[in-house]
Length: 103
Image: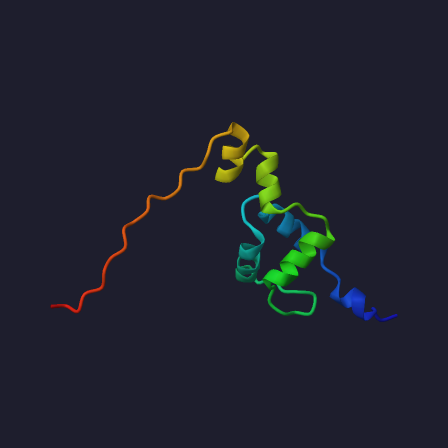
C-alpha cells in the first residue's frame, strides 16, 4: 500500500537528532545553513529554511539554544545585572557634530 502524503513528508528521526545536537552550539537561524551545507533537505526535497527548522524544534519539543545556555548557568548581560542587583552602564553619549558647508 502506498504511503499517505503526510507519511511521505514526515520528518526523519535523523534530522530531529541532528537539529537537537546542533542546538547545543547554534541558534535556529544557523541550523538551516549548516544542514543545507550537509545536503540535508525537507521531507519534500526542498532546502531547509529557518521556519522549517523552528517548526521541527517546536513540534519535537526541543529546547532552544538560549534555554540550553541558561540550564548551564550562562546568562545574558541584563540577566546577570538583574541577578547581582547591579545596573548596566549606558554607552557614553557623543556630542553632536555640526554640519559645515566645507568653507
